[in-house]
Image (cartoon, rainbow over all chains, first blue to last red; front, side, top):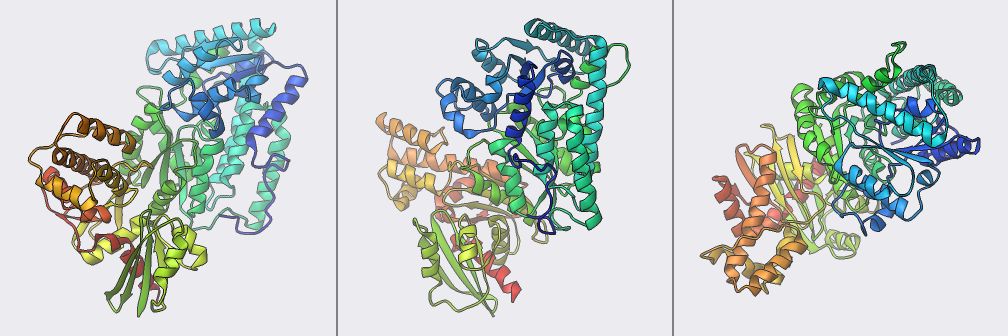
Amino acid sequence: MPFNVPDVKPLIEDEFVGEAAKRALQYIQTKRAAGMPVAGIYCGYAPMEVIRAVGAVPAILCAFANKTIAAAEAVLPANLCPLIKSSYGFIITDTCPFFGISDAVVAETTCDGKKKMFELISEYKPMFVMDLPQLPDEKEALANWAVMITKLQGFLEKTFATSATLEGIEREIKATNIKNRMMNRLFDYAAKKPSLLKWSETYELAFLAQVATTDDLQATFEEAFKTIAAREAKGVHYGTASAPRVLVTGCPMGGDSTKVYKIIEEAGGVVVAMDSCTGMKPFMTEIEENTGDPIAAIAARYLQLPCSCMTPNTRRLDELDKTIARFQPDVVIEVVLHACHSYNIESYKIMNHAKSKHNLPYLKIETDYSDGDVEQIRTRVEALFDSL
Amino acid sequence: MMAIGLDIGSQTIKLVVWKNGAVVLTRKELTSHDPLAVCRELLKNTPGGPLRATGYGRHLVKEYLQCETISEIKAFALGARAVFPSCRTILDIGGQDTKAISLTADGRIDKFHMNDKCAAGTGRFLEIMATALGLSLEDFMTEALAAKTSHPINSMCTVFAESEVISTIARGTARPAIALGIHQAIAARAVSLLERVSITDDILFAGGVALNRCIQKEIENKLGRKVHAPDAPQIIGALGCALLAAKDV
């Protein structure tokens, strides 16, 4: 699936096109060389504003490569989620550059697999485990999560021998909001009919935007928006105008699991929305500003994230309604990583919601980081498009 | 008017030639390590005409034979309606996968489900279980049909099921009872897949496993309704391709 014209200028023009993780790594290494400590994180619930306010740079430790899974399976059960196995495999083989340069690790209790894996790696680096409330609508949830965030602040301040002020945290809230507005401007171009962006462009910018500060992203954004404006002026778009528009939802996707995005494209579809923690999810909402209690504001915003670890996770259905209205997909494809029970079970609700409320065809793909099921997935995706 | 359909499956490759509204030629060969060579052999001395391909090997032959490809789901939907116009539900159990498809009243694909990459309950599974019992495929079915009792087999992973069968033999369980247990396990899996799509009106059973009357009977017992297996269940996908190719003419 190409653009409708040849030789389209990519959104980010650097030596890392197609290598989102390497680009992020170089950014973090530069910051570390300049004296900033690195805080490794494991999910979208890690409060970035606090990490930045203590003067640290975040590094995402979730891994997406099949190559370390065999090493991990020497310790971890084989029927565990590939994201956990891959991440752990990188650590025990000492090949994860992100973990290697992390000065501390922020670990969120989003699932049982991660929780117990954190115990196994707790010896390697100073670690702070955040007890994430999983009944977000209970009245204590917000206060409990705010306490956790304050404790995290204390841990980071002690570990890095720095301190954060409330004003500093408030500044970071505002910076996040500016960043999220820019990301949403980008998503609006992906949402155009036909889309102006290839999925990997949105994916790569989202990957960088998770770790980079808003200030550091300004130039990249300006260049990207200029490039998009030029595309728009020339009538450039991605894929054919009649190509099925695909909303991909579910587990975080990256590295080897982006095979699913590639298969969708090869089958003639255009991925217009990536509803996951490595896609659009971290940028969709803003944090309330000038509340006088920035920690509470941060706690409130992060608790809104509709991860399947939450129960009931009605926000995911509400967000899905908005995403469908905004991106106008023709089909919904859910990607569930093996042994991710919460996304897997919740997929039943997502399927019913997509089919009944939105009259959209739905396909669930359960997969891992290996390429052994590529042809089976291809058959299903092609059949899904055939049935439109 | 002539049109050709090819279904490059995991175990066998099927060819159908369609002429003036009827099947005039069918051919079938083992897929082997070189499916492209097998396709060329099958295509030898066939009348020229538009060609469509489906099955796991469809993308391989696409460039070499310069033909369009379609997914198995669509091919089976088209083929099934051609041999059995009233069918709304299709079960296909092939060499390495199982699919259930439900169709709308006018024959379009409504829902479909496929097993994952695991070969549990497929033709390959049947072959391995027959071998574990020291039987040919034909005798495996005959023993199961004649069995008075059944010994349930719980594992559906091919490797674990083989171990379970071997340990069941070691405990002295009669071979026909094990054979029937295996057939019932496959039928149960197929029924659960069918239940994921809605079962409407007539059910057509396609793919190589549809040649197995014991599986067919066990599925019928579990569903409490008739399951129709056509005379040549293996050619349904290739037939669907030929029909679509004929439309191009």
